[in-house]
Image (cartoon, rainbow, N blue to C red; front, side, top):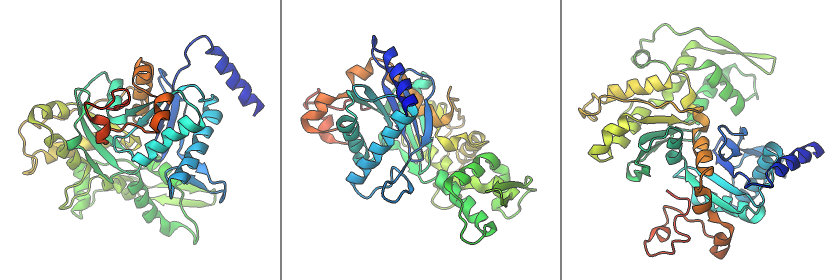
Length: 390
């Protein structure tokens, strides 16, 4: 502890003569990225978990019963991030919060209360992850697809503005993949033994991949091709799990269901494009950005492109203009693309001109939100209207 405090004091001392960089938080459901503004990568990527003081069990910070429990979770978690990993005090600093456009109101309001009341930050700049991720590419128009832990969210962005009426979301995510792996491997476990989320994630990342559209069609038709080789996965040094070749190849098919609902990953991307005005569609199809942890799976980008080309020729999506689909490659790893966009914005003057200050928050303890009509009225007080919003 003395060593950490000494290191923190050294870091603080170096920035006495200049403005201290803002803290950048990207709090996801499974992982949180933390770092400083104007840096090229986060200082740490850690699970969004805390240890409950009452039960001494590890739980996700998003698991709460009421606002008070969420407040306590965030206090413990942010204190852990800043003092243990960042080794910096958030007091009298500005904070950048990278959030989804669909972030629950209770979460963002409680987070603002924690930062202002408990940690005494100077200001908070809320940034929408789908929009600021384009700053990493220096483009203003793209179809941003976020493949996260709980859901896949697809939002078109045109000239720096989110086309909200065209957004699409489905529970095609990492948790579905982990459930599939768990159900296949449970029979190999001894009675009472369970697979943790960390083990399931490790199996998915190290052993599984996204197969081609042609081979996936053969599996669905009941004529499976020759599978890839099986692999052995050691568990706790005493159990050896057999990961079959078919499981390795087909586990990501949970993202591409074929049914009458037409809610696969390719479908929601095309639905988002079609719901946009005609003059936007070609530009969006030629500028697709994948981000989130699931988008790092081997072969997923080529599979999505094959799905889009196949679906675009069907009766439902038969639009002659949509025959070419192009994907961007972010300069960062896809799992922290949104955080990097927040770090870029945090290094500009927007952190001073568009942030919600401590004084403004103290007036009515209100956090401006794009979904709140009161914050978007033209005749409303411009000082507190949509600060840090889209």
